[in-house]
Image 1 (cartoon, rainbow, N blue to C red):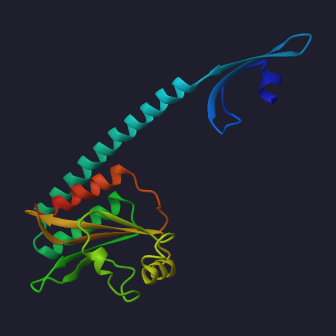
Image 2 (image 1 turned 180 degrees about the horizontal axis):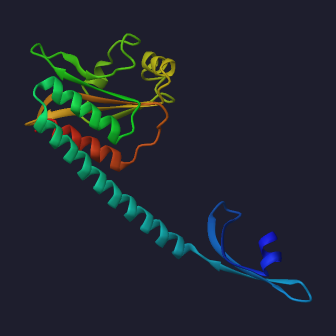
Image 3 (image 1 turned 90 degrees about the horizontal axis):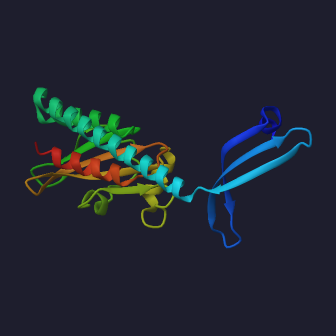
Length: 212
């Protein structure tokens, strides 16, 4: 290693050793070059506990950041509701906050009309005109994510339309008020394919916030 030969020593170099049974063992390596003989003395330390500790710290940090983001998004939603004059204005404000919060390519709100049919009220639906409505997704009782890469078998026409629109995924969130379904929020993503529990938690919070 160039650093070892130039500096004479390296400290706490992280590496992972692969056991013959496939298990991975995190290690820390210290090494120094003995002057004159140029003999390299190396010490390896099991870093499993340190690795777990750092992972827990990282998870705690992500949780804190997610909680902060959730509060900020809900505050944004509440403030926009206070200045919006009509249902259409509220829906448009809702779409804009959701799209920014989830870094979505596009977002749309659909609300139930007097005939209990969903109508596109605000935002942009890049799949409009490309695929017929998927009733099971429109009526989903929970936050649902569809990945273009895995939707071909269950939703072949939707998968084709997503591919044509260069969408990697989409999410559908029920908008609820007093335990009644008001409509849905759809977020469209150009590249995102991973969704953690923080994403679902914030989507559910937005769905409940729609009734405020």
